[in-house]
Structures are given as structure tokens and as C-alpha cells.
Length: 196
Image (cartoon, rainbow, N blue to C red):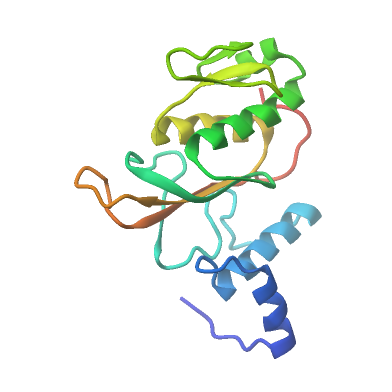
């Protein structure tokens, strides 16, 4: 059920300034503001299910269960964020998650123990590995399904929100050719350290 509300012009202009063009609606911007408020005050609206459900997802996006998404093969990332860091594709999302985890764990050995990705210490460039000198590890590139699974795993360990808006390519083997979807997970509350 939807409720119609009237928003004064000055507030609507402020909402527009926070909106992502072609993605956000007024409701999705308000939802993000509420999420931010709740996360920073420790409060939560009684009817909210925001721990695992995106707030204000535009109608043209399929909202997927983060724990059991449908097939993500033949998808491309439209926009993605791990915490406050924006990324442009599935494998960069995995890298950013590992960079955050590496900063939290403090050692490559601990990072290897926390990650479910195929990673190696130091430089490795065979078998689809890509070297990231800033964290001195190599991560094996994966398909979109594994990238989401591996990223979600670290997001939960770190209590860091992750959100991906993506599009299935117009291919016969794609689960939903030409359609867009969103995967999102948010921690229930901020906690320090790793959830190991």
C-alpha cells in the first residue's frame, strides 16, 4: 500500500540533489535517508525490514534475495557500492571487499582465512588471477554469481553494506534478458571488528 504525501518545493529540490539520475525515485532517496538515520542513531522503524531488503527500490528493478539470487550470468554492473566505495564491475567489487577485509585483518594470512575467494599472496597472473599491489594479493577472477557470493560473505564478516544494480544482457541464455535487478545487504547495526 502506498501513501501520498506532499513535499514542499525546497525539500523536493534537496531530495533531487541526492538522487541518482535514472535510478532513484523520491521514495528511494527518502528510504536511503531513513537507512542512514537509523544506522547512525541505532533506531529502526517497527515496520522496516531493511536489514536484508532494499528500501525504495524503483519499480523497474527486480529486487533479488541476497542469499539466493537467480542466475547472474550474462549481467553487467550499472552501479555498485561496497560501503562508501563505488565500483564498476563484478570483479572490482570482489577486490574492494578484499581491500576492506585486508585493512581490518591486518595480515594476508588472516585475510586468506576470512575470504572464500581463491586468493594467493603476492603476484600471480596465471589461471585468471589479477594482482593488486596495494594489498599484495592476487585474486582469481570469477563470474557474477561467485563475485556476489564472495562479496556478500565479506560484507557480513565486516558488517559493511553492499548494493549492486545490474542489467541482464539481451542474450537467450540470460535469466531475464534486458531487465535490471538489485542485490543489497545491510548490517542490522554497526559493530566493530570482524564477525568470525
